[in-house]
Length: 346
Image (tube, rainbow, N blue to C red; front, side, top):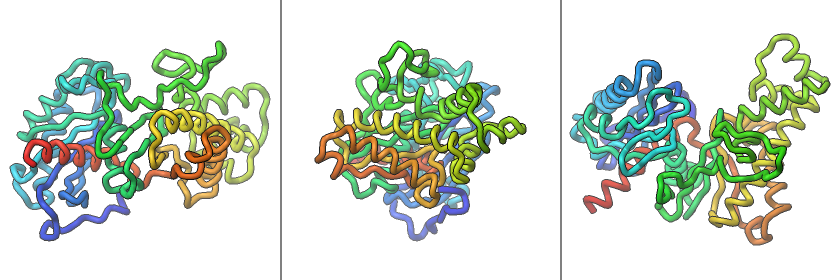
């Protein structure tokens, strides 16, 4: 969902209780106010300013909850609970970021409790990709499904697993780390940014897409993508998708290679979980079904899945793109807060 696509529900039409969701990213903080049915009432975003440190960000995340209340014309006390999605790895019971790779200096900071203190509301803490997964499960592409796996393709690869309204967090707060399933045990496997070889993220992230393209150009590949890079254009997934749409063989080959590895990873997840729906989201979805490159990418993923999985799973598992875009995390965080509120208050 892009900013221009957001439709805000009038407060008079809202179903109470109301919930706020905050999605912490390395670039931006996004906050959403939703009603009990998941309809959006207010939205706020601002830069994260990572270098200012975690306490400064926690204060601004807390203030964002007050801002949402003001935008909607309610008191902050009218917000039943706040959900907070954060990059991991996390210690969810203790409310801390264990090791914040894209948030240097934030390790072991008591983020949940500091946001609660600044907002004045109780906070539900979750991995950001899990929160996005719950957003899609609640009101997005999987709202009719009983279970889902969400893979978010961006700088890295995040994952969310929802089974019957249960957000799979795991015994050690590392559940649903789908980007780190092993897909290539070979000695020559690509290295994941986490420091381990052969993980799905090493083959299906924007970082790996760019690395594959650079390696092939360095090895002598030619064509419009290579010419664009040689001419000074920045090598990005958008550039690769543009040149693939124009028929460039290198761009197309690299995209299809990423799709192949993504299909392999999805098969492993399907065999472990048997979800009703698998969604592909994040920034690297190539215009989704509305774009020929997005359609081509998805079809290649499905082809690989169908080649490798059981016939029943190939026939019955829905594999498609997510629909909430960059709002999935904040809406999903609010949805997880709603679950906690219902558990505690009936």
